[in-house]
Amino acid sequence: MRIVLTGSSGRLGRAMFHALADDNIILGIDRSPSATTRFVGDFTDGAILRDVLQGADAVIHCAALHAPHVGTISDDEFWRINVEGTRLLAEAAIAAGIKRFVFTSTTALYGHAVALNQCTWLDEQTEPHPRTIYHRTKLTAERIVQTLAGPDFQVRVLRMARSFPEQADVMAVYRLHRGIDIRDVADAHAAALINDGDHFQRHIVSATTPFELEDRDALATNAPSIIRLRAPALAAEFDRRHWTLPQSIDRIYASTSANHTLGWRAHFGPEEILAQMDQGSPEVLLPLSATGKPSQ
Picture 1 (tube, rainbow, N blue to C red):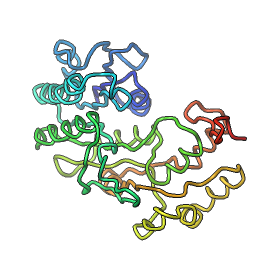
Picture 2 (picture 1 turned 90 degrees about the vertical axis):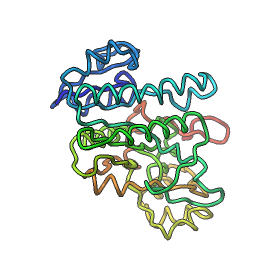
Picture 3 (picture 1 turned 45 degrees about the horizontal axis):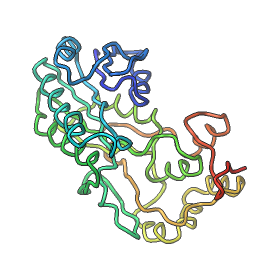
Picture 4 (picture 1 turned 180 degrees about the horizontal axis):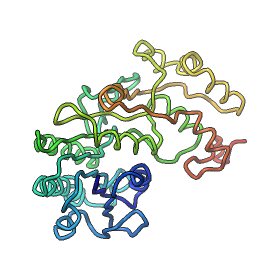
């Protein structure tokens, strides 16, 4: 398969390239040069799009302005890249006869749907309530590609959970309810390239949670008790390392739809965070004590 990959020099784009390159031809587009990028430039450049889309079978669109850009880049630029850029790319893909379009979105767009002082169970049926320009533009872009979907243009939207490097103790707990390994995100995109079903599909992709719906009240007020019940091995590791479990958990991202419809399942849970930290991986940061010094 010839796959056009936007944002191919970024962290997610590189993971995507490595997940797909053995069995496919990957045509990467990014403004930053990289070994995973064949076309250097803005994905909204019409001349580049005409070249790269010719003869392609699918598009994975993960290029975007992100949360760290909020406040440093204008709202107009967010709109140009995340919304109008996505529209331009999707319409160009349709004109080129491309049949499959996979759009990388974010669970962050749920925003205010996460209730204060509660633990909210979030899935594809939950109505997003965006907080920032980043969230609003990603949600608007989702709606644009949904309107373009049809028998000859199959669209898959993947709302990916939190995946960037953070302190190991934080990341390990996040893998129970709101985090995901970047390699699992890449594998979900690979699955979305080939699965059958409705012309338009939207899926949350997050690490598999051990929590149940009935755990929500206790997670909001006494999370350690539920973590010790549902994830005893992780709780034991926290005790051994003299780390503190969080007192509350405010949300759970459920990947049930991705599991059933994409045939995808996350492979890297909280135990992978501990292994990566012990190996000195740059994907995981050292925990910080209350004084700001690395925990021992």
